[in-house]
Image (cartoon, rainbow over all chains, first blue to last red; front, side):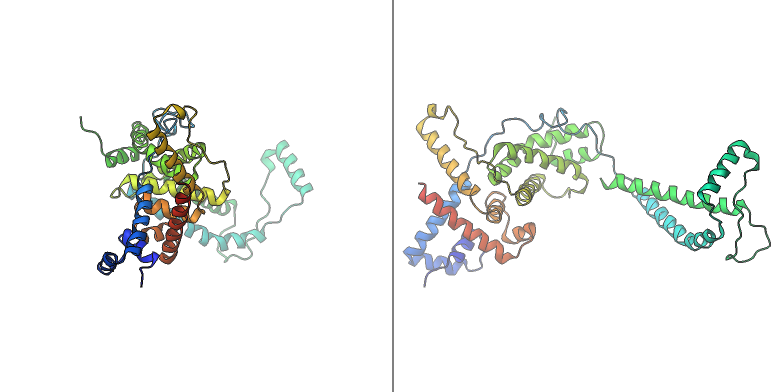
Length: 182
Length: 181
């Protein structure tokens, strides 16, 4: 019984646990020893393949033309850990705030009387001519809990400003993250 | 003044300051030949091999922050090059003309040198004629000296496939080289 090709390959690759048995067989089997020798010759030829020289130095011939090498940009310095943590926290805060704000915004939207395009244009022209008389559409917070205060532009603008602030935080946080991910 | 180690150069590159590109340039100078040879063995087309060697360094530069500083840079960058070449072949099905290293002035070389050169060229042609997945295992086993398990992990294939690809590849190579002798 001769050795298999697999056994010979694994033997030369030092990937077998049967070294002793294989060597014992090889010492008494000329055919297997010749097969091993032929395989060994291939290994030697591959190992002796000389390296080819480059025709140009990669450190001088970058597409950016930068010497001694590489992009004209420098790598961004990594963010300190505390800043990364802060960014994660603010991103989580911003996301929570947006989620909390969604039902309020959904309740407010139907209360607006959406003017037609003609009305909007008319309002715009009026606004241009008489800016002092411009007013926001009449706001009726029908679906909101009733409190003893007049719904005014203050609440809307506060909410909008809060949402804008959260959005800015969100964008900034993502920007810092993306910069760090490069 | 002592020569900076690869580790020193990587750390300097990571700082992102004015000297970082110079530090990475030194790494390129150290490893460009071995990286180019990985690409050339797999592609056997000089121009493409040089382009992909350069692309390898660009990718390494962009990912230098993720490189595990405890590992050796040389084997890592050569593995990046091998993967890049194999992915390129897979995605583009490169069928470019194979290079012939015989120069116009090779006739003036001594006979022994010519013989070595011709034999090297036969080996390269035989390697380049292998199917891509066979070429991959030969490159990783013989030239990057990875174990079977490491090759399986690197190429994301079963251990049994690594063995069968490698053994068949060797058989084909032996036949081709024996025939051309």
